[in-house]
Each structure stands twice: as structure tokens, then as C-alpha cells.
Image (cartoon, rainbow, N blue to C red; front, side, top):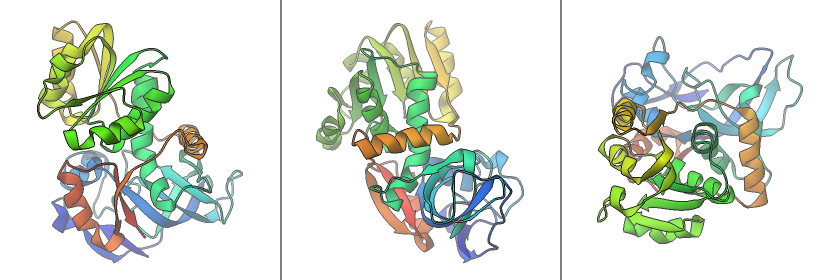
Amino acid sequence: MKAIRIHAFGGPDALSYEEVPTPTIQANEVLVRNKAAGINPIDWKTCSGGGAASFIGKLPFVPGWEFSGVVELAGAAVEDFKPGDEVFGFIRFPEAAGCYAEYVAAPVSQIAHKPANMLFSTAAGLGLAGLTAWQALFDKGQLSSGQRVLVLAAAGGVGHLAVQLAKAAGAHVTGSASAANHAYLQSLGCDEVIDYQTQEVGKSAQNMDLVIDGMGGDTGIEALACLKPGGRIVTLPSVTADAVIRAAEADGKQALGIRVEPNGEQLAELAKRYTEGSLQLTLAAEVPLAEARSAHQQSASGHVRGKLVLTI
């Protein structure tokens, strides 16, 4: 099968489109003929030697943790999935999962059935971002109806899903983004929007119960001023999480880091909401698998609205 593989950590030029062995499956796995794979910052960070690189083990490495496709073969212990089923998933993270490929071996506990009204490209972009948003809001953030939520980088892959999920949960939602994305965020449910280029977040949003920090670093630290007593911030970028947590502790506030976990049941809930129309995923671009280098360059630019997806 064809796949993207790296033989040494590096920039986009390290990605190689080549022939690799088709994976084999265990009893509790399915072999999926892949249709699309999601691209996330963790992908290019890992390929460059950061991110989840310490979990990858021996190179070469096929990147990617999220996918969507059609089940071709089911393991002996699999009961809920059969050949021909359309599925999507976020798998094995932070260990290697090999989703930038024509075939993927996927544990059935980490996948869900793809809704009939959802495109493969959309489904491939939902796993990591959707689960990150869900777990940040509800597992870590303990969001409840009536609370006030600030989403930093609200137009990004995780951010635009967090806005919708928070609004559906009955929260008052404020999002930060450039002015060009304000109307877009309002269409997703933002009650208020902040232009991070011209406004100081710490002064423009007050009395927040929860901050979902998609920026980290100085921006995440500045956002601590937005929290009301007893509020909390969930900071997503792992590289700056310790700094945000230390600053929060020094200020007598609560900050939590997060590492998203595969979860088939939560994927099924996200799929249900998509089917019902209460959740939508914005695709920034669909890029052929063989052009993964250019997709990584786009993702690393930091100015992507929604999700990038590789088509296979």
C-alpha cells in the first residue's frame, strides 16, 4: 500500500510518499480501507522531533492518528463492526497509529460508525479535534449549563468545535479570533467575540467560569485574568502547559493540562450530534495524500480555519 513515512525527524521535506507493508490486525481490531486522514499540529510537531516523538519508538514512522474509511476485514473478536461498514476513529494516541496510509489497523474500542450524511473527509477531521474539545469542556472543565466560557483560538480545529459544544450545553460563549473570523464564530454560536490582534484578552473578557486555551504561552497566562474566583483554565498546547499551570498557581487559580484520549463512545456521541445538526466541522482544505508536505506547511502556519484533511 501507499503511505507517508519518515525515516528521520525533520520538517516537511522529511515526509516521503512510498510503498509500505499493509498492516495486519489483532482479534479486537478491524482493517480499514482508508479514505481520508486528519492533519493536526501534533502531526508536524511529532515529525519534527517534538510533540509525541518520544512515544513513537523506532523509525521509520507513518504519521497520523485520525482517519475515516470502510472496514475491509474484522478480527475474530469483533462483534459491532463488519466488512463494508463506514467508520471513523482517533486511535492509539500517543503511540504510532499509521493513519497517513491506504489501510489502517484500528482497535474497535477507538472507532465509531460514520453517519451516512457525513463525508469521509469530514469524519476524518472530527476525531482528534472533537475529542479534545469534548474532553477539555466536560471531562476536565466540568462545564454545566449557564456557565461562561472563553475559547481562545476559537476559529481553529479544536476551537470551532468547542464553541458549538459549549453553546449546545447551555453556556454563554466568548471566542477570540482575528476580526475576519468574527462573523463565522457568531454563526457557530459565539455570544461575544474578541479580536486578539487589537484587544487585550485579559481585559476584554471577565468573570469566566472556564477558559479553553488553544494558544498557550503568554496568551494563556494573560487569560488567567478572565477567570472568576473558582474558575478554571484548560490549556491545550503541551509545550507551554507547565508555564500556564505555574502562573495559575501563583495567582491562586486552577489550571489543567490535557492529553486527548481515544474514546469510541465519545466519537459516537459526536457523530450523533453531527447527524442531528447541532455540530458541524469546517474543513480548511482537502489535500491528496501524496502532497502531505504542503499540508504540514499549511498547518504549521498557524492560520488555518477549521481542519486540514488528506484524501486517499
